[in-house]
Each structure stands twice: as structure tokens, then as C-alpha cells.
Image (cartoon, rainbow, N blue to C red; front, side, top):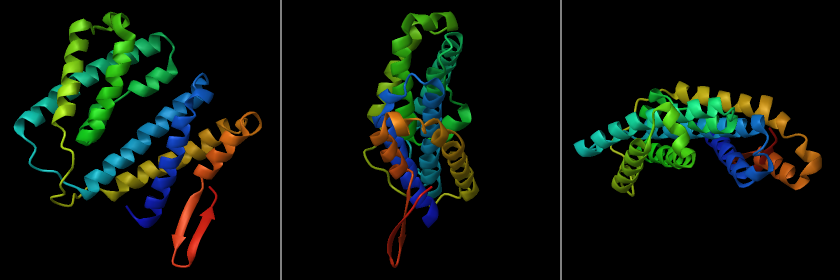
Length: 224
């Protein structure tokens, strides 16, 4: 990533963390909660692209590759069942949390895939018997829990960079534009009423949405 993208990425991370920490303030506001989840997914994509661009991992054992494939296949099945359950229940927040594509999961680093699996595993456990309507029963849930924990256990504590990936920088730029639009055209507007009901939270949000521009002449804050 270039310097501007690094600065923006820090702003995205700060904004996402603030919203995570104050999720209870808007968890019952479906559109805002869904936008928050969309933001998290897109910020996660930036991290994935960054890893693809900077690191080309090699040396994965065949067993781990196989385990990853098995986990991905079952993750998509569980995700589909949860999506159907969320749609039937008119639960937009849950739906935003569980919609994943094969392409997105394939691009994910091992660590990100593990994080996704852990989250979906928890949501599936909470849904429980309701997923049987969508062809996911106790056996599938138990298998998914086992694969998730097994995959988590084989993740290396540290990664070794072996080569520089040829991943397209334009892919990262596109995601940056999407996040900019999401924040500017949706989240900033949806959060405006909090200026009057939760002024401290709103001020912290606006501070997080500021860009810190580091130059040779010092530091300047640029509001977004």
C-alpha cells in the first residue's frame, strides 16, 4: 500500500474499533448495525489484500491445505444455513455477519479464515436446532466445531515472508473507495443523531474519522 492508503487504513481501523466498543448503542438499529458489519468485512478485505500483496506464503503442509479445504467447504454450508435462517427471521444484523463467498474465503489468510470460522461457529451454536430446517444438524455443527478448533491449532504463531506477491494494487484501491463511500454516504449520516443523544460517543467517532497526515514538517489533522 502507498502512504495515503496506510494513513487511511489506520483511520478505518480506529473507526471500526470505536464502533465495536460501542456496539450496544446501536445494535437494535438494523441499518446502522448492518452498515457496521459491512465496514468490518471490507476492512478485513484490506488486511487480506495487504497480506497477499506483501507476502506469498509457501511451505503449507499438505495436511493443512486439506484441512483448510474441508473447513472452507463446511463453512460455506453453515453460512448458507445461517443466511437462510436470518432471512426467514428477518434478522439483517445476523445476515450481514454470515454472508461469505467462496472467492472471499479463498483470498483470506489462514488467520482471517480462522477468525471467520470462529465467529460463524459461535453464531451457528447460538442458532442451534433452528438450522435443522436448513439441512444443518448436530452432526454438521459438531464437525464444524472440530474442524475450526483443529485449524486454529495448526496456525503458525508467526508468518515468514518468502516472496512478494504480484497481487493487484487496484484491488486494494477499489476496497478503499468502497469504504470511503460507505462511511461518507451512509454511516456518517446514520450516526448524526448521536451528536445530540450521545455527544461523547459522536465526538469520539468524528475524531476516529479524522486522518492523521504525517509530513516532514510535523503532524496535521485532516477531517474527513
